[in-house]
Image (cartoon, rainbow, N blue to C red; front, side, top):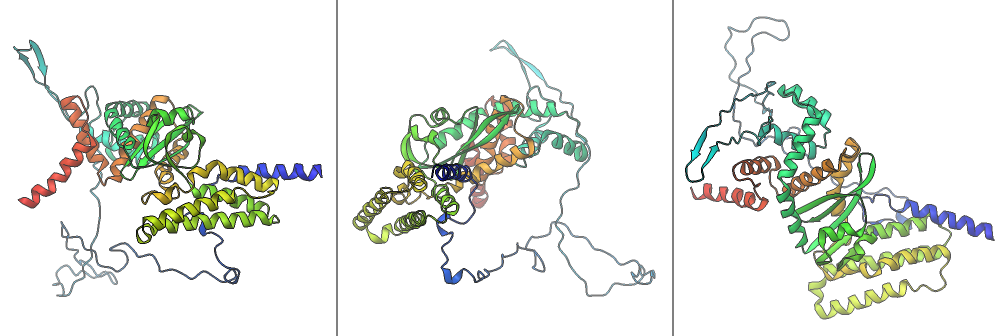
Length: 457
């Protein structure tokens, strides 16, 4: 008997280790939903994915900005000279999309900076050039390209150095690239603060964290995101002090998280990721298939989540009175479920996990814009996971902070439909002239005003 209980405890520990594997694209409560009659049948094939415009034999819609005639000079079959022969009236046409050939040279510019004496200030004023940052040899075009390759494409510095040398004959060391990127990130700190202010005022905020390496030691990369803003930060700890540093003590929106304890100290409405929670229950159910109570608990819990999803979607049709009555009933069903009579050791472990998240399980039902999962935060942080796998993390804390700053700006630009390279270049030009970077809002307003001016013209 004692040996059996010991084996069961070991199995529970092993199952607990497996419950945090990444979720699939399919919702957890949609898994195993097929009936026994359907299990042997093949799933019906869905419609094939539509090809992109211009793929295959489909005509391309772009207007050509260049034309070229391919001539027939010799016969491909026998080699006869056909250069003197008039071509036939019928021709074939094809559209070719290409890019500008790499210049394979570096543009080296000598900038002569004028100096003038201001009698009012009694100072010598030196002209500024917007071709490069103050004190930097690398021009803005190369600077923007390096930042894009490092952040958006997750390339490490040795690969960036190789790319610049191959296509542009620009010679620069990896340490030089690192120092230059850190300098750019330092300039853009005010924009990082602007992004932080945006997420602090969000109505629905998603948060997640993943491991990061700084000089071989374990750190953490955090993301806090709204539909149009993403704030990244790197810290030594995965604890609550990071949440307090980013969001303060009180957050007035709804926070969607995976259920990590660090978020529990924040005063706000929270929604736990039900994909994570249901996956944990599924792992125990699969590990102990002979325990029917776990299967019953799993099915009832999944039904509550499905009913909550349906209730959230039908709120307007039901009316507020009916909605509140059904919500109260749904919460009672959840409360009754976790009061399971005489649960075994394994089911008790499951109930403990569900009880821990109970106040945050049905929050989404009361808010139309709050999802029942945290897939959005996982989507935002995926680029950081990819960067970590390619580069292995950061060599210094300064480099890690620089990555968080530039990644925040890149991701926010992407979410808002803005060009990161264009914004970064304009922002750095603004810094050269004024000593401060161009804000995201100012750039967004300026780019939105351009089409209106063209339309009026």
